[in-house]
Image (cartoon, rainbow, N blue to C red; front, side, top):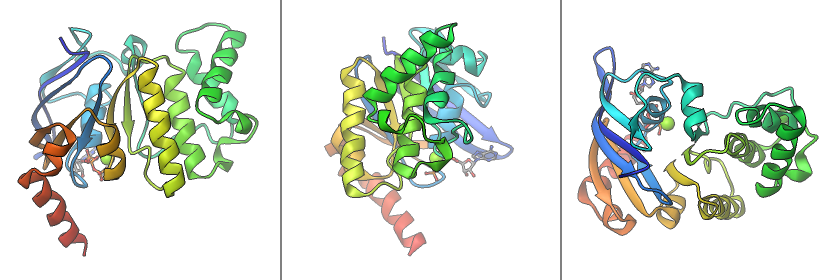
Length: 241
Ligand SMILES: Nc1ncnc2c1ncn2[C@@H]1O[C@H](COP(=O)(O)OP(=O)(O)OP(=O)(O)O)[C@@H](O)[C@H]1O
Ligand SMILES: [Mg+2]
């Protein structure tokens, strides 16, 4: 039994099938990459998993039980953390206050929440930024803060949505190290990322979608050489060019 099992997930926005009969799973201890061109349904899949959006059909099981219809905060409490593609810090609060607020997911006192936040910020190499306002951080810091906020909810499964976007090569290597460190601490990961260096380096398996539908799945090497995946990305490149 997988930690997360997505079964025949479909999400329609009016007549648009943003996610169309997609099935995949994440095992305990795995890093699974979810890839696809812009608009292929990756973020929508995340929004369905934490029930930010109601699903149109299909089922999502976490630890063997369906989470369809549960409130988003309940799903967080069950152990699914997530980051947002467009980071959403509490801009006028400090880095420490942001992470402390998330830690209240598991504890009831300010002291416990702050202690947990300090631990997580240390883990994320952000401790030297604790007193800065969230909005003053550069992009790499904001992405790291987004990860820290989700870690403070103590997830078993973390959904990472483009946490490496906008980073320079040095920052990318640091992000890869952090993601591996998170997994080594027993947290399974489902990651959406366009930067192939990141996704190919860290994923145990990759699930590729295009126009909301599965086009390939397998180990990174297999998916990278898959004709449908190559066409989906080349097509996108031509469209942009
Ligand atoms: N709230 C919404 N209402 C209507 N349509 C939406 C909504 N959210 C997403 N969509 C549409 O669903 C499709 C999938 O969008 P989604 O954001 O999931 O793509 P994505 O794979 O995350 O893309 P990107 O790589 O650009 O982040 C797109 O056509 C998008 O316009
Ligand atoms: Mg997206």
